[in-house]
Length: 381
Image (cartoon, rainbow, N blue to C red):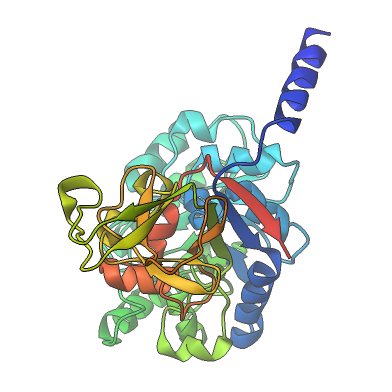
């Protein structure tokens, strides 16, 4: 009864909360279209990567969008992320690509696949695994990050055989330079991968999944002994190699806020911290409640743009923790309450993630994953 009353109270409380000042829109159509474009173009199966809050798009939202699509499992980084998907009532298998402790592996959550990333971890699993679990064994093919070396494969085989609870269901690795211009490093990794896979497949003929490619490496699929590709950034609308431009991917995320006030600023009047912006004429600034806490990178100070209506306005001064100023000029009719587009889903726009990443000398991935989880994500068509 107490739980019922508590849930009823929380439900009523949520229903009367006013609309938030910031909304993130996630396009269901873009996610599904992008995902299927990869499957069709490369003529192979893909699995969606939902790690890091689905690259900032919202783990729960993306999992629900994809629930009825055909793929063998979701990919996440941690047990925490897997539990978010399970909380949505989704029962499809989930691969945890990151490191997991033996306590986490023994945790009673159904249809979870774990990744073995070191020989030491495998030793711990072999001696302490208390119930049957499915695993993917990661091979270090040259990135020198996670995975066992080819020289450790024989020892890994013995450890896997030693415990019947270890069900080797897949093999995986990762390319270091698939988005680069020099293919030599990738070809070297493919050679090591193919040799190791051939050996392990003889010992464990029931291995179902073999995957080394992510979005950028998908173009190598015909050269690899693999039957599966992973797609993260590509599914969210960003090509990782010029050859993928023909897919015409659509960014799925856009962000909106509202103008809270408009102020007049005299010529040479300082705006914001340290007065790093001083207008060359009398002007007006619009204050929008979005800052680096909400994912608007501080490197966009005096360098970025937001859109109000059909016009894009420059950021005036430093991006603050929770707000930013825009120079809107004296003739503008902008007023408090007007909608402001913080992030555009058109990659050609000045306030798109593609443009922002260039200005910040980084990648869209970084900007997206910095958008905090507490901001409201709304799935739109």
